[in-house]
Image (tube, rainbow, N blue to C red; front, side, top):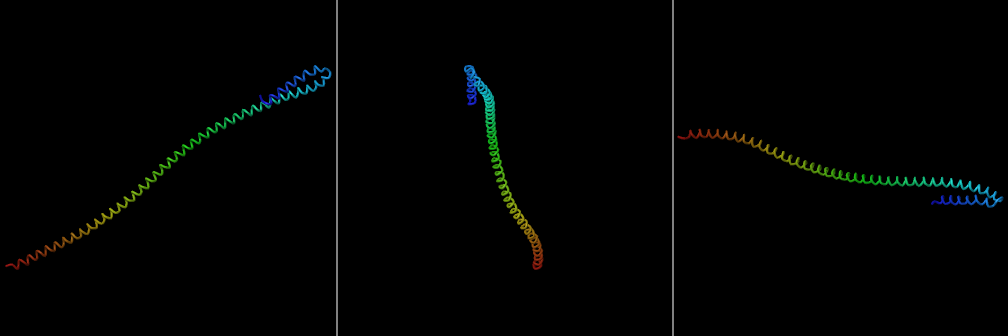
Length: 167
């Protein structure tokens, strides 16, 4: 029982006493009756105020329970949001890790491509050197062919001259 309800009950009891007392007191009780009437009026107002205060208290308690429920709901939603954000953060870490692996693979691929290009350039230089050697050899073969033709001619001429000297 609340304090307001206790006060209301005490005032109701006092009012009942005041109603019965003037009947016992007779003529002197009239003044007492006026006072009792005022007490009844005050008791009635007090009871009305008590009901209004109790209604306000009930409304405040209801609002407090609603606020408590809203805070509990909000806390639950906040915890869910935290879990969602943690899951997103984990996924972003996984994506970042994947991007790092891709960047590493790209760097390795670029390095391998550069090495391959270097090897191909060296191979190209070797082919060019071989071609130059073949060209030089070809020129020398032509010269040898010319020298060989010239030597055959000289050999033929020597043979002719040697045949004249034979008896």
